[in-house]
Image: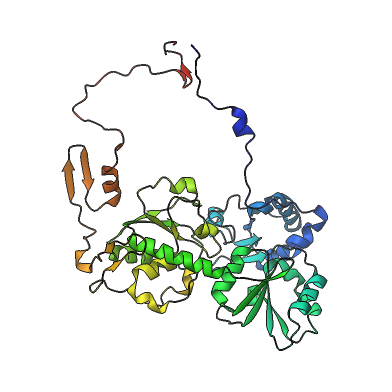
Length: 443
């Protein structure tokens, strides 16, 4: 009789290809000074008399980090620290990791989100530097916008800011074209026609949502019109309906560095509780599909993070991902005045009061066609009530949705069976590997 073995070839794991979000970049030694502005960093540290300085690199620039540190230490004659693992998003200043050595300052390299920071630790940003064919860009502008009555603003992203002076010279004689730096733009500015010079699709989407230009162009070798913002709004409408239908919400901590993260966390918890729903507060570092799959009892997740996080658009997760804005619109009847969607919770935080549910009105779900009966403030269970119900298999807390979900499962974990199992002395268990234990009979 043929013996079947259930094991996989180790070569599958050894030869598995890992998909990288960003291709690692290794700068030529002769270009390190210009790319990372090492002299400028050294002068900033000296002029402020910083003793403990941390360098923060995104994953795709880590290959250059050791050489940058060695050169800085050679100039300063003092120890410079590298933040080996960013707690959440690399575009945010990582105060948490820097606090481990009680750092005086942080030098941040690579892409930035320009989110308002929650700490007061001094920092500077050293932007990435990429090349741009200025003559080709000029030629395309002359062809696309040949009408001088057509006013257009070119918004220059961080990767091209080192070319800003050259861009001004190239477009100096075009009266209908003006340039603005992304790190100097005001949040409340409005534009009729905007062209964004960048290679970051996520940042392009944020520009469309935050500044709401009548026409938004972007340049990726060719000037094109951006039209994807409407798809995002449609997706948010679906998420809002899912929030209203949900019973249990998972609040994912996705940042500790963005300003007012504790305020939006408290507001989110209040909105969920006032709606008669349950929530779980989850902190697992960077959220991944595998981590969040450990919470099957949740109906939906709301992630509190910076506006550059791409998790909101991911379809890989088993449950939908919502933003604080979605929670506000879905569960706060006073949020009608907030009409423009944004990923930045600081843009709407504190603009409206939380509505009371004493006069809540029911409605019909647009997803399930079922009637949604609102829970009034008087009907919400007292959070201090610890009443439990006794069952044959143990006890469950009546106010805990997770326990209710567990009670409905066919397998609820190992049963202790206290007082019903005869005690035995410890004895030797199985020895070997699962493929075939040594004390297992041959078949």
